[in-house]
Amino acid sequence: MNRIHCEREKEIIDALRFGSLDGELRRHASECAICFDTAAVSEFLQGNQPAVSALPAADFLWWKGQLACKQMAVERATRSIALVRRISYLCVGAVMVWLLFAPGYVPSFVSALSKRDIWSTGVLGESALLMGVAALFFALLGGLYLARSEE
Amino acid sequence: MSGSFADSADGPNVNREAFGIFYSRTNRSLWAYLLRISGRRDVADDLLQESYCRFLAAKLPEMDAAESRSYLFRIATNLLRDRWRREELPETISASDQRFEDDPETRTDVRRAFDQLKPRERQLLWLAHVEGFDHREIARLTGLRATSVRVLLFRARRKLASVLRKRSQTGKDGDS
Image 1 (cartoon, rainbow over the protein chains, first blue to last red):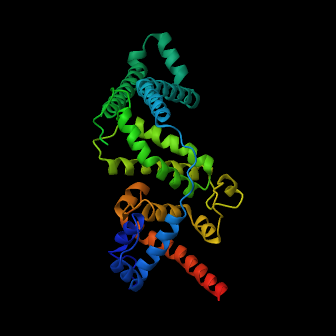
Image 2 (image 1 turned 90 degrees about the vertical axis):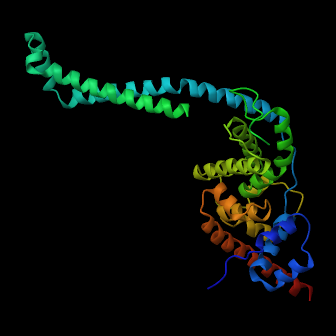
Image 3 (image 1 turned 120 degrees about the horizontal axis):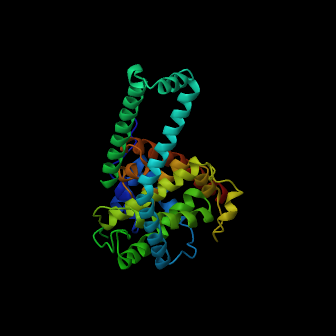
């Protein structure tokens, strides 16, 4: 089986990063194909470091970092509001779809309402149950989300 | 550097002085990494700033200097990957992209060979051979498994080493 790793690889890399290979490592690199390639590639890459241009000052980045922190704090604070808003849009969408695809349900509900026998037909009771379940589900989701964000 | 020097609850995790020291120790190597992997000076400048901002904004646990450096390189590696995913960076560094990199040194054929490697190969080679990260650290930085890093690094190294060998043979033939 072909070897793909040598235990002394890291030693070779570190030696070249902080200076050069000593006699023993040089001898090992000449005998081990993996370390020979490692030394060649390390020397090449370390010899090809780019000339560093003017980098921004630490104070400037510190200031930018503080702005980023404040922005993140605002985002965290408004995340629950955004979540509730999104859920509201979803609920409105779901109701619209329901009204669109169940047109027979609405007239029967309206007629039952006009006859004042909605409880006996069970229409309102069914709707109230559905709404209650949906409210509990979203409250559970919201609670889990808030608990997770607190962590 | 430790995460215990917090200035305020909503402020960065480290104090200004500690950040200054950390920045002066890491900025050049991070910039070189970003430049060599992206091949573009403007991208390297941009991602350098973004990396430090994200580092400052992150809620970090207690860390020593080596862990902080590793975490910074992880942020930079993720930012580079995002750029590739959004296809803002080419897979290989072409001659037209090289205009952004106005290094004083001449671009040799071998340098071009490095630029033609896949981004992942360039990343692994740079992190291992220039930054000195071990396989486990590279796996953490790149999201790969340590065993995969070992194999991919071996292949990338062999590819670049064969170009270097060919070049040195051509050089010797040219000399004789």
